[in-house]
Image 1 (cartoon, rainbow, N blue to C red):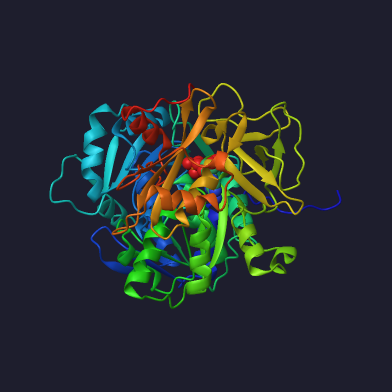
Image 2 (cartoon, rainbow, N blue to C red):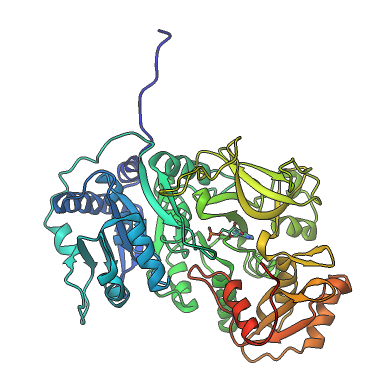
Length: 538
Ligand code: AMP
């Protein structure tokens, strides 16, 4: 025997143990369910997590049981984030904005035995409760004036315990959490993260070229923990010994700004959130005191947003790409030295891409025949991914979702350049095929929102007798602005060839969004259809 290193299963309980032991007093600022901002610490969160684990075990939780958690980003939610897997359970994060039918489907499909929820979501839970086939007990966090469910009190359960509990140990490959894909086509699919995949993914995320997280940071996830594994924020921050700010349910720009001013250095959300916040900052003439970087992902980040953060507020934008199936983060547009040396405009071009992957993520491009596509920044292919934090098989699926070489097809069309920077061209199904040529809906939208009167824009394909498909642009103007079709087309004409320009420009007050805050092209297509547009067949 040459000697041996220790067995040390990569379980997420070790993350919270580390934070509580070596960064015990770091502040966790939380806007709780009652709207009050309170301060906790990693030591306190661990204590609460141990008690939550103890209480769940007393209720009968067994190893591998799924626990539905429908809660906003608060310190209590962090306790459950570690309490459930610490008790051997599997957290099933539930998005309260899903349609009732979808919630019923995923809770039944995952076979959740317990459902823990924030008191203000009583109505959402009550509406689905009679159709939940496997839930044995409901647990309410906080108080409600109008109880509609016979639920146990989370605080009472937790406070009855003494934290004298040992985390359930086991194989690092055991399930830790489940998140369902948004299911824009067909039923939602469950992605099961293991302890190991969460630990490795968080280790990759805190690296300097990714979140670049340290004990000097305070991370505020605006992205809800129920969206795509919470972008790993609740694992990455304690692993790095960083503090956290948890904004609760109130995500209006003034409330977010107030939380950002609690010492936050880095924050993360989808672009729509930042469009609203930037607008608020401008109107009120506000400045950040501590924020220095912002992670933007989930859908394409408009160039105008990156520019505004960096030029007007001195905040570095980290444009990121990922998906529920990839834990979720796959790449960050941080600056390699070759890019840092570029002039500002060229650097901005690179930041509009979604960046390069960390160690543990492998990315590549494939053509329609499964052959590799050149990394020349021009050639488009299907983006494929593999790694220890990438899905192999959906919950209860009969078959692997990967090809023979372990690659998972993301459904995104992308280019890669010689430095490995990825540019997302479009979702495969959102590309617009006009006269045999592809038009990227993302490109059209990005240029449209760069117009000063445009708040948000969406481009979709409609059927056309001669060209097959043609783009239609739907625009939500900024409050008080009234852009004209001619002005918009003139603005876009500076960036696109005439055949790429939308045939129609429609103005609406608001664009439809999915439960995770992305543009809902599915709903938009239905709305266009109702207005008499013909959609391309499949
Ligand atoms: P979800 O699993 O719901 O988070 O959706 C994942 C999908 O969101 C990806 O496959 C992309 O199509 C899209 N997406 C995520 N981040 C970006 C980004 N930075 N730019 C463009 N599309 C993105």
